[in-house]
Image (tube, rainbow, N blue to C red):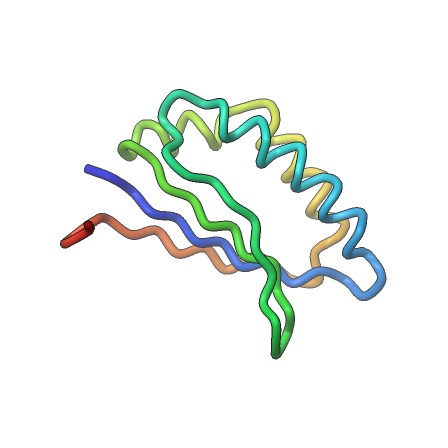
Length: 98
C-alpha cells in the first residue's frame, strides 16, 4: 500500500540557505532509493514560510528503509541545528488516488 509523507519544517531566521543546501543532498539521494516514487521539497508562500517535504513511497517498508539511510540520518543531524522547532510529520495511506 502506497504511503504519502508530508513533513513541515520551520527554519531558524537566517538559516534558510544552509537548510536548503542540506535538504537538496537528501532529496537527490532519496529520489534514487528503490522504494521512493516521489520526493520533493517545497516552501510555503505565506505564513511561517515553512519548508514542505512531499514524499511518496511504495509501502511502509520503503519508508523505514528511507529513515535508516545514511543520507536521511545526515540530513537529520544538520536540520536539527537549523530547525526552529520539531517538524510536523503527516503519514498517510492511500484511499482513492489517481
